[in-house]
Image (tube, rainbow, N blue to C red; front, side):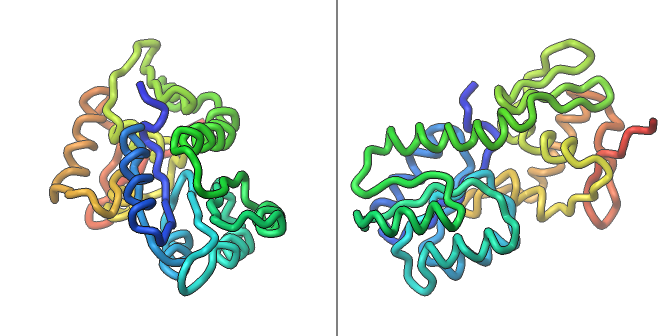
Length: 227
């Protein structure tokens, strides 16, 4: 099972050729990848949506990468950020790290190195922070994206795992249909109108029927366990 399963990456890069290459390479690793080309849209996305990693160019139009980084850290958004820059000046790299970037790469770079650094940041953020998630006989292992129920391994698709992880990580929180679709699919993906309901159905069938409760007209919730 590839490490990218269930993880969402935002790429912010104004060089169209480089951006397309990054998106293609990351999708091959089974990440969900969204792409933006300027700082204003990046900041809006980071305020309103949830990502597991941001790959952020510094030389962006409308609002540069350092300004985006400064603002999201001011908003207490701790998403891991890997900055990209064509500038080879030490001051730019230091400024990015001082503002809260987790790592950097200077262009031109090898995409293999970028993927390795991305994996390291994601492991640091998820795999080591939470080793296991337990809920009513369910155990999720974020580092490996494996799931067991009543000590039996359960085979889930990438999106089923992503959906289950989000719901079980926040029992009692009601997720709207739109939010869950954004968590599972990138903006450029073609999504069937009933795709979310299909994933919910499969999870209930593979695990247990009352795992996920429908809040009619609003969304879905995994209820908190009763002590």
